Image 1: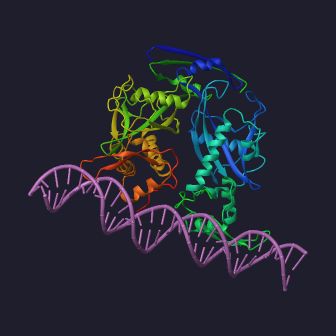
Image 2: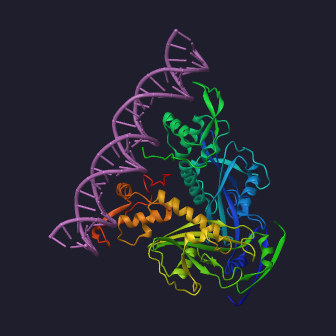
Length: 252
Length: 252
DNA sequence: CCACTTATGGTCATCCCGACCTTAACTGGA
DNA sequence: TCCAGTTAAGGTCGGGATGACCATAAGTGG
């Protein structure tokens, strides 16, 4: 480590050329954030994808994301990209780091390490503003993971990890409430679990668990008429973030 | 992004100077891996620390780690650093990514994003080989988090996150077995939980849970005499990695 | 007025869990 | 040799959580 290393790099139009590769030999890399943004629409779990306008993977779908800037934390970078892609400020939204993905070769331009984030929200807008997100659209998660559509880079893997993380989070935390616009009914909250876990839950037992768990939901008063049937009571999210006891997905 | 950006950087002796900061404006960063390596010795949870031989934080204790090389995955980089620092090949060892830490200012030399890893193992050697690890030593975790010893960079936070991750992992996975050299007794496995959770568990109830959980441990035959008392039966780790039902830390 | 739908609440057997007791098996000292 | 001490192993028992299921409430539209 005592020798002098000189590196000269040239960037043009976002394309990082081979000279970047030499820089990587001393530990340099591009660092980006990518976002797996989930919401529930029409009874399905949707993820926000953009259509890439440039190489590599031009025309492919990909998770939204971008480079981390100099003065910002990784969380701030994720929040900024979220705002640019969806126009959401992130106050009524759950955001957490998923992990780092940095296999060499995941980006043909050279070494790029991405920090993946998981974002969950209710009622995220259909038409997303911002310059980068001109071709952003919501896609059902089921269609991606089981269909022929392939995502750019290693975004399939990131999406798969994000989905598994969400499923686990529903068991041990109260995060499911962020999928529901307030106030919400217990049926709406139950639908969140059913959609994300892909199986039906007993309405009665679900109600018992949710109302008994301290700080999960609290009655907000009032009722809401459904299309049919008895009106449902309304609830707000409670103060707890951890769910005790947990609501485990059982085999049955 | 259509303009041409030229960056010239100079590195010497591992010190990244201010010219790196300009490179960061286009998304470049140093990427490192840091390892929180835990083992149990003398009834205490220990973490491997090194003494830094150079600025910044010269003389401070820090988690072992280093730069990610060009051709390796993040996991491979972590495994390589692990081998260099401990001489352990990692076959009888649990290694998983903890997360990325990249606050600007966490390293006074400039923007450095580190991918933190969690490593758990049994019987890790006291004297660690390798050039970088001349001053490596095991330190009880309790002394660090509650004592006056401050770690370099943001390694306090990484260590805290790693500790919380381990505590959670014991609840929902069978990873506790990697702390025990095989074959082990159920008392030895119970001590793992007691040391990491910082509370005592009922031996009888612990035995019931562990032996009933599918694939957690399996009898290996034979017994081992203790210093006093009835000899204990020996077990090996089972085939499951998920623990169902989980072994929750309760309030009582 | 009735069929249908959804919400809400209750029952009941089962399983899990924490607290506690009992017995087994071995060590070491009187 | 006998006994106290120690650890392992297994059982009991009440409370709580859970899943399966049933019953009633309270709306809708015919």
